[in-house]
Amino acid sequence: MASTLQPQILAFSADAGITKGKAVKSGTDFKHVAVGAANTDRCIGIIQNTPTTAEDVAEVAFPGGGAKVLLGETVAAGKDVCAHTDGTLVAVNAEGDQIIARLIEGGVSGDLVDAIVYYATAHASQ
Image 1: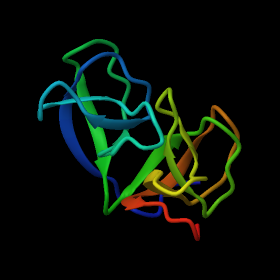
Image 2 (image 1 turned 135 degrees about the horizontal axis):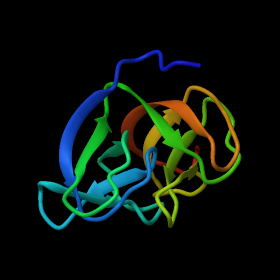
Image 3 (image 1 turned 45 degrees about the vertical axis):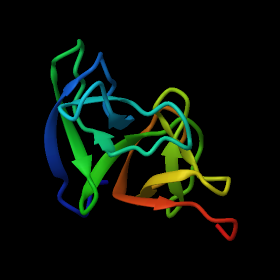
């Protein structure tokens, strides 16, 4: 399935190697990104390429467009996701989780699936 929304991509430098589809947050400075490592990290987007070393170009999908996201567990289509400890995306399940995307399609751990990138904070009613 192809993304139904065109990605909104901004380029940064990677703090280290990052796998395509992982959530990223601000890195060592405003020009760098690092892997999101917690469900409470305020991630800025989803990486759409695979920089292999520090300083490689990191193409980050921002809110307002689609993205390929790398799942860290089984998640159904339509669910909101946040960063896991390794930067993969997992289902939001607690108040305060920092949502980074909503899945267009579901999948299992290790799948690259389509999502809409957006920011929100999960509330108890979710």
